[in-house]
Length: 407
Image (cartoon, rainbow, N blue to C red; front, top):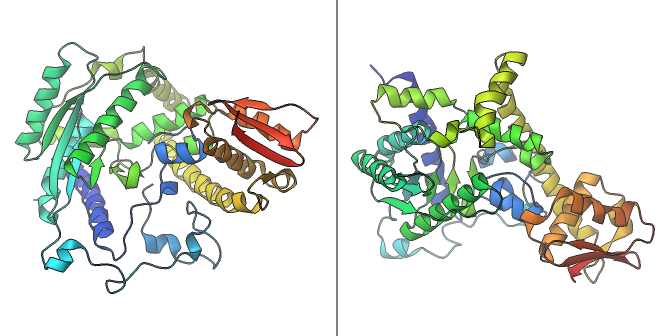
């Protein structure tokens, strides 16, 4: 008799991600996923999206049937012009190839809070990784926001060791105030996970976000009036070099909880997740249930589907903007207003945002209203003066050119 359906579902999800990681490491000339496939930090740094941290589908599936000259959504403007992957004879041999040794087994870490989602993820990783020759470890982060949080982190670390994970880290962080309590805690957590991955040389860090989390993220972006990149929610692959992987984005929260129950895994429910002082908590316990009551079941699935559709659109627009960005500059590299004016607004504003960030404007402080003001220098030119942007960056129109530079 096989495992419980919930356990089988989480193990299959993790197995697929681990196989992806192995494929990426063993493919000739392999490189990490391109930043354009990521939301979160990568997209925010490139185009200033307000999204948080889709996995690239199989490379063959993405490319199949695409007409020549049409860039894959999410790829840079010169992607199709680049040479194909090097063969084993063309690329320099790796150290283990020169010595004849087997390549080192990759290490995959799981970020675990002790909640049902991340405990289910940890158990699936512990079960699947050894079968694929992958080392499995874990990290739990103590945010220091509750009394006894250090003891709780120690307990979670011990549970991970009992599952057979090694190495296991319990990392304490200091949560700042910038961006509000939720954003500050998230930033501190990712900084700790990045440091742990670097410290151990991990190939990836698995995160336990579920389809329910994805639906909440889409609604939060919608409520803030954010752009399409924000509505695309969380990416299945994100972070530097595709470090972060989210195997459960197609699974609901109850599946993860059920998997813990049938495996007798102890679960800790963070009281912050039920605290109405936090926006996401109110949305989870009041907003989404109200929507399902008014619209019927299936709201979570529909929102997750919206995230994927939005991601496809955002990737295509980012690719278009990447191509158009070079075509709208003169020989000196200055933006030409006449060429910018004929572009669709969604493409033009992406170019403007990227130019502002390249000039030194912090992406996290650059909002839609800033880009709209710069856009008026092109579409509503009435002789207005320079536009001041965050980071002491100034945008002004000079002789038919748009100049964006440090003031």
